[in-house]
Image (tube, rainbow over all chains, first blue to last red; front, top):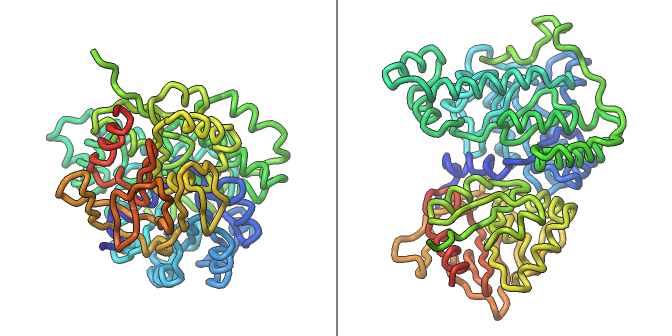
Length: 293
Length: 193
C-alpha cells in the first residue's frame, strides 16, 4: 500500500469537483458550511476581507482553532500556509489537515521560492493567474490549482481574468505545431513535460477551481461556465447577511451552473451580499494576487 | 444495430468526468444525470466519488433519492464508488444518516483516517482475471457488515471492498481514477445480462 502518491493527492482534488469550498473561522461556521453542502472547509483565523481591512502579518491559523474545526465536521478540512513557509506546512501535515493551501492571502514568508510540495504526503492547492504560473506550481508538486482572483474584495473580475488567461493559454497550446512547444514552454516559464501533458489533455493535469471574489450564486455559475472544476468562496458567505442561505444557494448554483431557471430560483431573496471593493481603486501594493509568481 | 448501453453518472458533485471516461473505455455510452427526467433515460446509474454529505443533500433537495429508490425496486442497476456506496448503504456510521438504503451493508465513513492515510493498493478481484486491480482508497469508507443477499467480490486486508447485491454494485475504492476499466466493464455486464 502506497500513501501520498501523486494519484492519491490529485485524487482527493478530483473528489472535490463540482463542489464549493468555504472559508470558516470557527466550529459553528464549519457546521453551517457542511450543512449547506460544502465539499470542504478552509480553516482560517480571519477571512480575507478582514485580513485586508486589519492589515498586519497574516500567518497560519492557531492549531487549536484548526483542530476545533476538524472535530466539528466530517468533510475534508483545508488550511493555509504562507508562500514558502514549509515549516507551517509541516505543522499542518502533523495536525492531519486534509489539504494545504499555499496562499497569497497570507503574508509571504519567501519572496523567491515556493514550498517543495513533492516532499509532503498531504496534497497542496496553489493560486495562479495564468497558465505558466499554474504549471510552475504543478511542477513544484501542487495537486490542485485555483485562480488567485483578488481575495477579500467580493469582486469576481480578477477571478474571471485569471480563469480566462489559463483557459486561453491551454487553447493556444493545442493549436501550436510541435516544433514551437519548447519555445512556448520557455516563454510560459513552465516545465516542458507539463506543457506537453496539458496540450494532450486539453486541460490542466490537475483539478482547477475558481477563487478570489466570488460572492453570489451567479458569480459561482459564471466561473463554472468559464471552465472551473469547482469554486472556493472566502469572505462571500460569512460576510453576507444570511450565510446559511447564501451557502446553500451557491452549492446549488455550482451543480446546476448550466440551468438558468435553477439559478434564478436560488438567487432570490438571499439578503445583502458582502459589500465588495472596486479592484481598480486598490493600489498595486494592496493587491494580494501579485504575491508569489 | 444493437443500441449501446446508456449509463448515467449522477452529476451533482464528484469525479463525474472520470467515471464517464471509464464507461466509454468499457464500451458504453455515458451521460450526466442531474434531474429526475434524465434519470428516466438511462439503463443504469453510477454514483461517483465525492463528498457523500454534499451529494446526499442535493439528491434529497431535488427529489432524486426517491426517484432512484423507486427505479431500484424494479431492478435498476446502480454502481456506487466510495461516497456512492455510502449513499446506497442501509446503515452508516460516522456522519449523516443513510440516504438511499438500497444495499444491505453497514459502512463506516472515513474509516482509514484522514487524507494522509489515504492510499493506493492492488486488490485481487478473481472475477475480473488474475491481474490485480490497482485502485485508490481516498478517505475511504469500510464495509463493516454485509447482509445475506450481498455477494463479496473482493476483499482487502480481510474486509469486503467490492460487493454486489442483485443489480447493485458497490466499491469502497475508486476504480475510475487509475485507468483500469475492468470494474466498469463488469457493471456493463450486470446491466446487459
